[in-house]
Length: 386
Image (cartoon, rainbow, N blue to C red):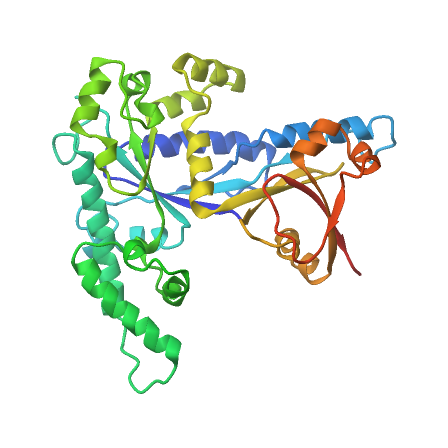
């Protein structure tokens, strides 16, 4: 599975700047991994995962001195991917056709997670469409458009009169509840917390049911003021003033991730070594993109299991709680049907021992059956029947 993220925001919030930085990462990614699909409003980028390099080192070391089918000594690395979709045309009135209207709405219905970029930076050369900087107002504008679009969807539903199907009746009860709640300015995900009820409504693809990650687009000065860490802490007068005016703690219960789109654009122009040096100067361990992907995985309950061999070293994305046969099915549908068992070792154990051969000798490789729940970092080889 590939994670799909829709990026939304008012004009001049920094959405295009961040997306263009992602596109530059995509170009480098696509050059090495030609399976990536490139479209004008879609960026497919790799999920940063240092574990893959270490596993490739182990494969190369184990395979040295043995005959190989190719001249390549090091196996190719295939990371998991995230698809970022640039949702254009989101302005006040989008729900009734302003901007790109329905085109925007159709795009956003397809994504797993909405990343809502809100402007926190002040720049007299970049005019804000609504006047002075006010993240809470901007957040409200976009939420209102999503609510209005969902109300349109709900109002089109027809009551199942004379139908005895209990699920259909329950669905109508939930629709009636949501009409009242959304009309009062509430969000569907806050009104319907039960997973089973959400499943009943899933075919409606309600926009306000989707998880939202709020990204506070801060300035370079605010990064220097340690606002980037997401705490109410400031070390410069500029960042202190901005925190006082637009405290992130007032943005509600949704997750908020501070990122500087301008810095991400600058990072995209640098080599990996230069990026590390630049981040170190800023006092940051990871880029905004890395932190965004990590947060998205956390919010959606996603993990990665790993496979390794002379043909490739690869990361596969699954949800927490996925059992071994279903994880095998992510690689190929036949693997789930013909699953026998999984040979597994944790990434930490494998790296500590240095090779699968040594792990096998010490009994660290173990076999798991159909009821085993996969863990993040499991290095696995599935045993499949004929």
